[in-house]
Image 1 (spheres, rainbow, N blue to C red):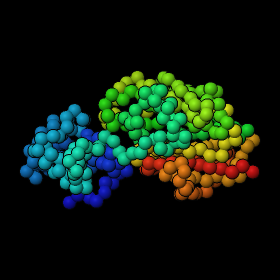
Image 2 (tube, helix red, strand yellow; image 1 turned 90 degrees about the vertical axis):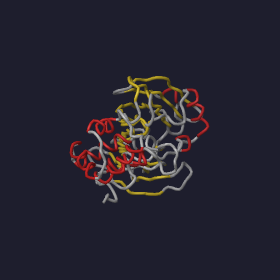
Image 3 (cartoon, one colour; image 1 turned 120 degrees about the vertical axis):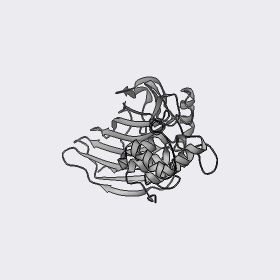
Image 4 (cartoon, rainbow, N blue to C red; image 1 turned 30 degrees about the vertical axis):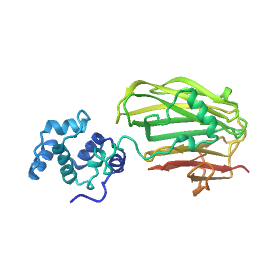
Length: 312
């Protein structure tokens, strides 16, 4: 009998988002079963399949498509103690449509960043499609607030997974505080990427930057890269927020303050859209030595997360 839920968060996410071969590989690892043992357990259920085929499936070199292969996948769910249909639906959705395994639940990013019209124009100039083919698996972001209460820099270390073939870039978006000057904002490509085209809107206070990878990702491939926006051109900062198009993945945000400008109160919040009421409010305690606050979200939902603070 299959379990109601898998034991690890990583496996649970892969069963929701796919792709199939990574979900299968994660399940095999979690159960600790060798492929020969899996083959034996399938044979006990009347399913004959070679170890080579199982190996190809978990590597993504081949994809189960024939009726007998799909029956083997259903049996695999029992052998690996997975929820019924959890692997099968990554190959054949119950509604008969195309598999949704490659792409988790999503919202357009333009609906999460205001003003949307200015962002749409900038993305058009970069020829960026509505779906860039990537969703975030993990994102660690650090924001630095300077002695004049301005946002000086935000650094990102991001892990993404491709949900289609041929992806070789990521478009990063920075929205400065009121009064910022996009011409003074600098974009720095750190590890595993290089800077491409950069566009900005003075009216909207938004900068978009193309970060180019040195490889083309296939569906299911992951990529780790780092980048930063150096700002300091805006007025006093009172919050930092980030929009999320896709569900799933971990997000860590740390905001660090200069010792000459410390807030009197900090709190985390969530929103479904820029104009929606804020929820999930939680008071955050400023650390003494490092003068920082942070939030950790293990499985983000489409929407907005952020930290706000009050000055004395």
